[in-house]
Picture 1 (cartoon, rainbow, N blue to C red):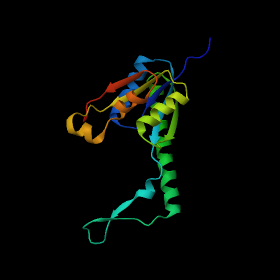
Picture 2: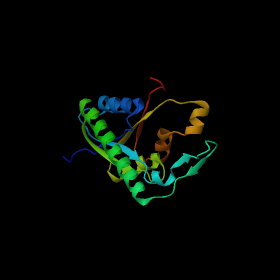
Picture 3: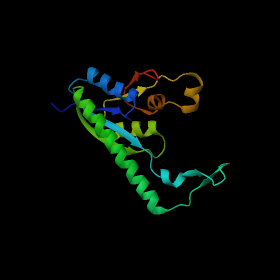
Picture 4: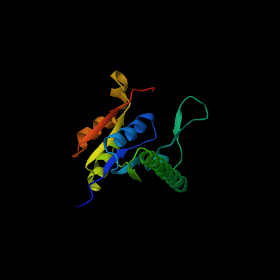
Length: 162
């Protein structure tokens, strides 16, 4: 009998994503899980700093070596976050492996694409439970995953501030 396809858990280290890991452990006990952290490349190319007068801001001159260092640090941080999530998933009863991927378009699209590429049978994602204006301004990764994923999506609601 072939091994069952993994589940994919979106994990960013927040309390909402920790709740998603716990729920995944309860729902899919013993399953193989991929704990995914999405990181954004090229942040150094968009660094804005206050100008000398304190009245506005200016773009930093582009320095390719600084951009590479920032990108490398961003990727390493994402790998560490994913590893922490995989450790938590292991504690929750899952056979977990970490994965960090670049967000080239949108985090929700990166999550859905990673789930498809790795043959995930389901995606588990946390939701902070933002409502009203905050939700409209900040968007919703869980909502985006629901729109882009071809797999079943489990959204674990975790009210903001808890």
